[in-house]
Image 1 (cartoon, rainbow, N blue to C red):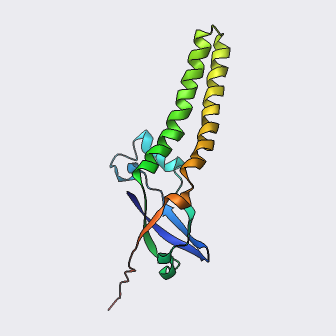
Image 2: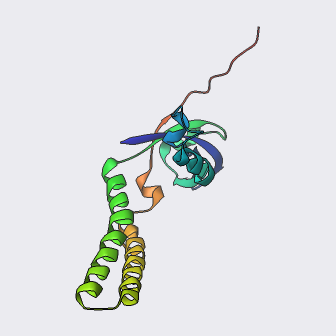
Length: 152
């Protein structure tokens, strides 16, 4: 199970809204200021992700601002990654190969490859609904204790 820390931002009768901070691996690297990947990661990465988690028995004790540990199964993560990244790529290459061996011109090959890649993205979107929504995949694992520091 892949785990993450989330913060409760809103409580509703049907469930809770959780927010996670997106942290790239570049932030822990000492060369992230001089590395192109680090600069791109800082500019392009969304800083937070907010989603709704349906009501469970453990949600009764949650308060706004409280941190929880959530998890998602590895097999769901791997299936999603293969679906989103590999399927469009395979259809892109397949359409390009068919156009190439079909004797199409370079413009036709390019158009076929783009149509194949776009079809792969649409198919991945349709098939992803079979894997399930975020609410069904994410599980609340633990409620983290609130630690307060008192000045004496």
